[in-house]
Image (tube, rainbow, N blue to C red; front, side, top):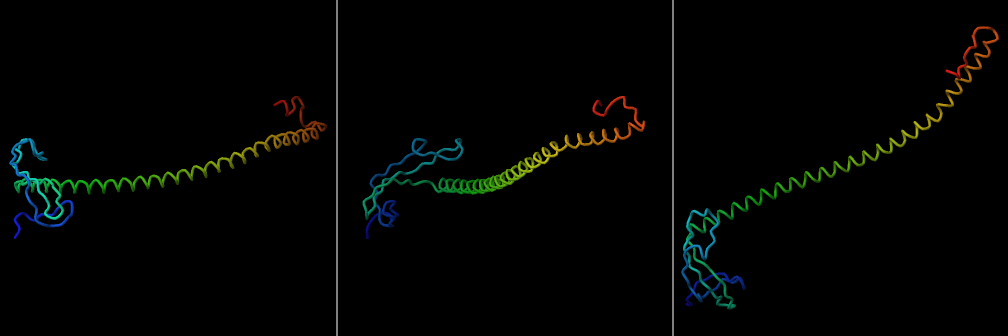
Length: 165
């Protein structure tokens, strides 16, 4: 039986016997970056260089206390929860923005229709205004004609004509 620890090689992905090339004991802040409060001490750990028995690939490993691994796994889980929450909030914001964009397009269409209506209204009012002076003139002419008919009879004292008003 071969001596060594069976681990999965990061290069060939096979689980096989791996050999330790170096082994060093580390303690303190020089080798480990701790993700929790700075008040707590960093854990002691063993750093090793391993070599795959199949492909010869070398990589670094570390032996850590179980409590520190649990702490890292808990922090990772919390990060995943926060990532999921952030993703959901981002999707909600995106949906709100899409709805606002749709509402904006509706408002733009309504504004275009109002502009068309305003143009049509301006055209109609322009036509009415161009007709109005003719109508008033015609009214004055009719009134003058009536007054001329009545003047010989003596019904109207013709001191001022309607055009002078």
